[in-house]
Length: 428
Image 1 (cartoon, rainbow, N blue to C red):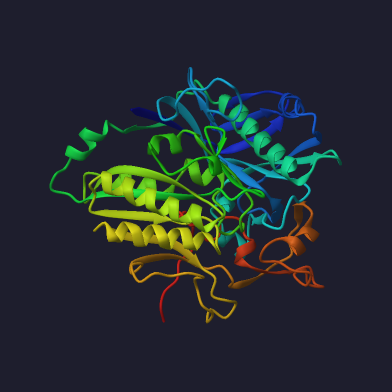
Image 2 (tube, rainbow, N blue to C red):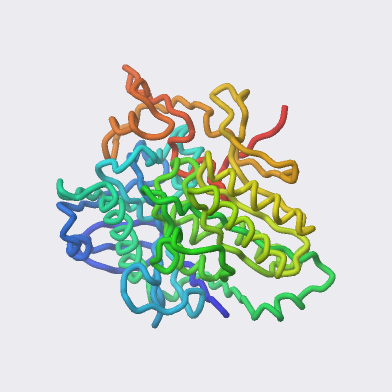
């Protein structure tokens, strides 16, 4: 399996009446894009805005962030999401627009949506402040319930990302990276002198707006499975969850999984990356036991010496994380886990709701309860009052002088549990 990513750098974006990419400038026909989005009759209105790095702007409430992508020929950009017919991801040629993202917002669905600040101290807590945000503001009809509302926004975001990505298809100014994922026997035989490593990616699959989609299928209907990391890179995994914005794995994070990137970077140098297991995190204890058992069996079948497991969400998903860690360690495989901490605003509370003694190698992405005072901004895209219902915010978050007091929980991707974040924590 071979995937060629053609990475096109976007220097600026212009919203107007034509689709064109020239000299690093992306021109988007918003009228045509609006017509596409409004095909979903559950949507009452859609509008578009831009927020650029360094601008005194705040986007709230953010639901998902997606990198624009498009296939050169054949295949599906986000297979299984937008059409009945699909081809496997992780193959062929894909254009990836770097420097810009599609950011979906509009009336709040649930309390686990977040904010993005484009400048000031808040910008230092999210990678998305470094991108030109093509903001899509979606309003739905009154009779659309919260679950449908969530679906409407997710599908619209993916549609927009594919539409915008297609504008750059054929562009000859790109950086090419080719990723290879040979058959398992070939992978195992590579670099016999290096330790073999597997990656277990936990994904949210708990329903009630806590979902992830693999080839368009809700992962709570799946069991742990061996998949190709190239499928992640090529849009097979789409976010559909409303977990805490700080720890949310957006579709952007799935496309640019930091652990996968680092494993490929180090492959053949100091490790041999041989396999990836997708682990849907479920609700009931029985399902958690089943998942941890199957994950450990799959990891053992790869014959690896080490594994890394990433978390998604917080609270009971930590139990999935710890169970998997324990079971893998009992197979004789050294395991490292990546998680955030919920240590209270003073950092002195119990950091994790669950723990096993086998979890003796932990990478932390920081304390989600730490608070930050954000300055008043010149422009808010969305509704500032929604911070009262966002995780990390409360009814007293908006101060009389216009400043905003929130936990970093409320900042989109602030402590992303794949490690694609600017935060960590140290012991003092």
